[in-house]
Image (tube, rainbow, N blue to C red; front, side, top):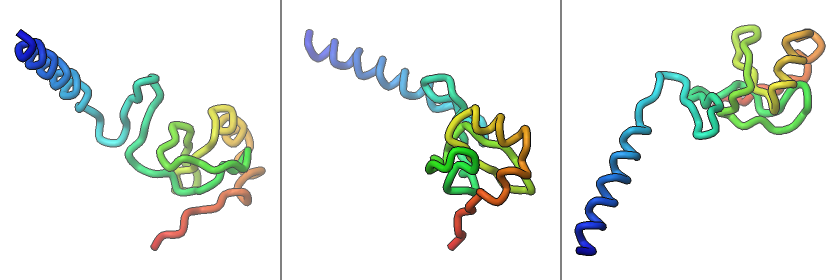
Length: 96
């Protein structure tokens, strides 16, 4: 009887895992409902707040052909209101 329960449990867990595999080409949904991007941002630090930026951050915008990442949604809004104010604060990742 224990082996049947184990088999059923493993089939259920496998089904759950497979159902979460589907995703769009460049954008995913995290378990929290936030957008998760497969393409990295081009900068290392938030030009508004100054903190480190996760390369897959959902807080991003396009500017001068670059994908700029931010530390919060408020930072994106502030940047978009006056990009010229923050352009000198953007440190781009060096490509190797």
